Length: 423
Image (cartoon, rainbow, N blue to C red):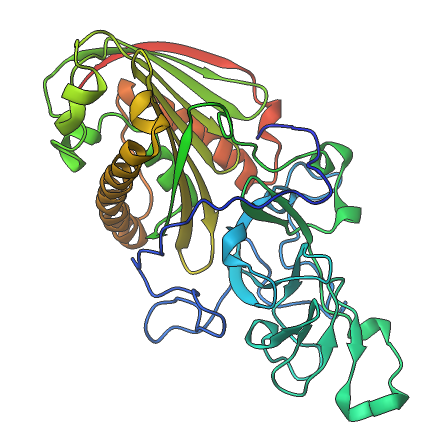
C-alpha cells in the first residue's frame, strides 16, 4: 500500500460512473438484501472472524487477530466500501467487508459514516432505515443514530430520552478519496503505530493531463489472493482471453521480479510486441517493443501498466474486497491515455465504450475461471505445483500467507528473480 498524505478535509467526489454490478452471485447488493451464501447454509462470518461476539458488548472486535503488539492485521488496512457516487446524501447502503456488516450513510456535513449494521435495540439492520438530516433511523422502532454511532433519539422514550453510552452502535474509521469510500475495521486504539500509519491506496495518473478513467465492479466467487494473482498472471491470457488479449505463440518473455520490504511485488517484462489481440493494429501499429509492468501491493491491490506505443498507455488497477462466504468484490479502474483519441470528447466517447465493453468481457472470463478454481479448492484443498513462470504468484502468496498468520510481510527479506517463460 502506498503512504500518501492525508486527503483534504472535504475531498471532491468525482463524477466517473461505475458500471452496474455484474452478478456472479446474488450477494449483499441493495440495502436490506440477504447476504450471499450457499443454498441451505446458515449465515457465517469469515474463518478469520470469531464465531460469535464476546460478552464484552457491542464494541467487541469481530476480527481479533494481529492487532497492537501482534504483527499486522488485515483489519488495519483500508478497504473500499463503495464508490462515492453510490452513497448520495439521504441514502443508507449495506456493504460487507471481511464479514463485517456495514451501514453506510452521509452525515450532516456530507462526510461518509460507517456503523455496524445492527440496531442496539432489537437488532434490526440500520441499512434498511432512512437517513434524516445526516442521521440514520432504525426501520423497526425508530432509534436514531448519528455518524459516531450514538443514539440521539428513542421515540418510545419521548422527551424523557437520555443518551446511554452502552446503546451506541459500533462505528468505524472512514476515509473518502479519489472517488471511493474506504473503511478500516480495526479500532484505532488497538493499532500499533506502524499499522495506524497505513493509508488508503492512492491512484497514480488520476487527474493527470490526457488520462481518462473507466470503472467496473464485479463480484467473484473466490479467494482475494487468487483473484489478485489472476489479475497479474500473464500465462493464462492466451487461453482464457484468447483473441481478445493475446493468442498462444510460444513467444519468449523475460521477467524481472522483486519482492520489496513494503509488502509489494514488482514485475518488469521484456520481449512483448504485437501479441495484443483484436486491437493490436490500434495500440501498437508499428509492432515495436512495448513496456509492461505489473505490481501487487498488500493486501489487495494489483496494477497492470502498458505503454503500447508513443502516446498510447493503459493502467489497470484493481482492489479486491472480501465479503463473506467466499464472495469477493473487485473494483477495477481502467485508466487510459490514447492521445487525440482520448483528448477529444467525441472520439473519447467511442474509446470509453470500447474499453468498458472489452474490459468487462475479460473480467467476465476471469470471474468464470476463478469460480471453477474455487470449486475445486473447496472440494480437494489448495495444492499448487508451480512452474518457473509462477514465481510472481509464489511471491504474492508469500505475502498473503504472512497476513493470514497475523504477521507483518514487511519483515520478509527482499527477493529478486529473473526468468523467461513463453506465451
